[in-house]
Image (cartoon, rainbow, N blue to C red; front, side, top):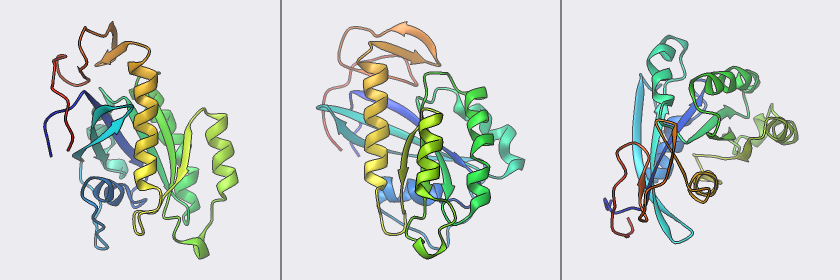
Length: 208
């Protein structure tokens, strides 16, 4: 992957253990799916670049552990995030019921400007569906979240989900000419490049 990019956006994946966060990350960044995927311990991350409005966006995606015993470790990793995918498993209603708790954690540890997408994963399990699309859509609208259903297994909407959240981040944070580095609000510097996790610097355009 090329190191040339115009903007660097940190996105966190959050939600209960077993909802498919690691496989969503693997499908988007490496086009891989692991049937034997094990629970994440602590935090892992991967990167990929995409194009938004002729700009090269480097997405730095953090996969956070869903188990309660790791919460103290992973809460610190919300710092610096400009986007979050809040995931549940459409076949496991308890993972959807816990969305409110995860949303509260995001509001507690992340900045108000963070772009949050509610993601109903494993939509390939149509015969096991326990969470209605309409119910989740209504919840997302009520809480001003983006919403999409995905399947890491058959690659349904995975690309679209990341493209949508990265585009929304770009429009909200860049076109408003604001930089929330460590989420202190400052004016964007001159030049085409903003790095959200390091001091701002210029990088030449390019593609992965």
